[in-house]
Amino acid sequence: MYMDSFFWGGGFDILFFLIFTIIIVMFVVGAVRGIGQWNKNNHSPRLSVTARVTAKRTNVVRRQHANAGDMTGAHGFHSSSSTSYYVTFEVESGDRMELSVSGSEYGMLAEGDTGTLKFQGTRYLGFERHNS
Image 1 (cartoon, rainbow, N blue to C red):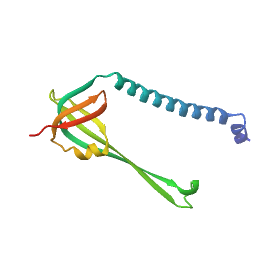
Image 2 (image 1 turned 90 degrees about the horizontal axis):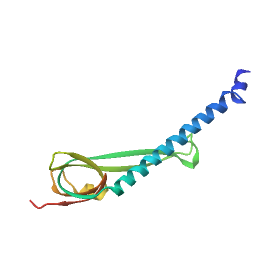
Image 3 (image 1 turned 30 degrees about the vertical axis):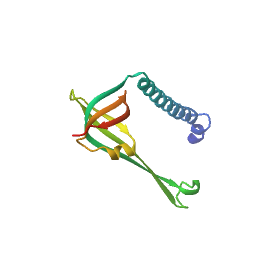
Image 4 (image 1 turned 90 degrees about the vertical axis):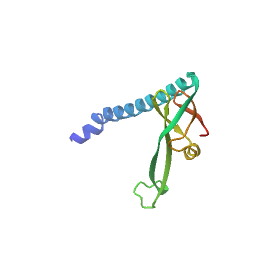
């Protein structure tokens, strides 16, 4: 009897609405933050500064998905992965900044490289190595 009142007209409706609302709010907050960062970068000046590459790192995310929409995995699984690349630059003042770069840029940069870093806010625009 108690379970019937929970599912039909009891707490289930409230719980479902609450969880649905939390998910929507999280999505909206994430979108607003992303748009805000994009807008802030667009309004930041494009800067060119002398910098040195001090560190490099990657972030690999692996996902496993069930085939044929079957969540039990009875039809097997397939996997996918994505890699994000980050480089830390140190400018003449000693400040450091970590910027997201493409895989090809990541491969061309080595720790200890010095050159001219071009960026706009948190957006990496390029790095021109100085000949030593």
